Image 1 (spheres, rainbow, N blue to C red):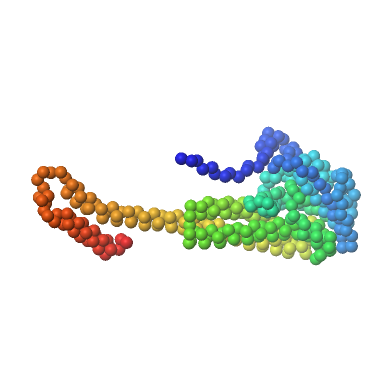
Image 2 (image 1 turned 180 degrees about the horizontal axis):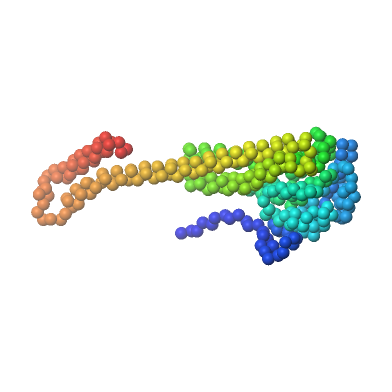
Length: 362
């Protein structure tokens, strides 16, 4: 028999074990193998001023530390641990936080310090030339007049925010760095809803297929959607917990007037989580319906085969009796013996069919 090959997902290279046995505060990049160039972008702005630069050296960050404007320093590519460490040390970021930035397997969380606030979360997206959901870790460090962002790849998550800053659209240029952090978190949560809408379309399709024309691939489709839901759920729930801490307003780095914005993002994560849970419950029901339907079909087939077998049992008995090769057989010389045999067969089949029908077996 030919062997069928099951297509497997290409495994990504993770180096989570690279830190095994190393002392704390050891700077080791943990994540997918990347070779792209690391870039350091700066956007410095207030209501009337806008400066945008690509820094060639980390030492140039010192110029923005003492200004009253809002400074957004974006590091794209964290696979060069030395550069990430240099940027963090320039702003006196604790080495343990530097470790968390370099470890892309971190759970979404928020940590409060006296001089800054650390946030790390997962950006969830589907690449243009791919069909599977991908994730990348984004880390934020909020200070009194600055925001540091660290991302693995140049994803379009920040594009709309940068456009608003450049065009002075909305109130972002009139606010401080905490509002900028809110806009980034809000964009990430909005991306969750994009993924949820994508999953909702798949759930509707597989629901129709399960109810009306299930086939051998239906269970694989349901499992694939459940896998995507598990991935979303893995990151949405911690994001909700982290935003709940910000929504409490326990840090001086977030203005009182901006707390409601973070509360709104928290509500969105709650809505996203409820939607995902509803989809997961529906998929579990669909799986049960599929197995129930398959079992009923098998039972129907078995019932038909059983009825056919039952009908042929007495016929086989008669054929066996009259097929015996005895020399002296009562009806062997009977002129209408063959016709009589078929009359008996017809009566037996008709009688059993009437009996089965009255019993409502078919």
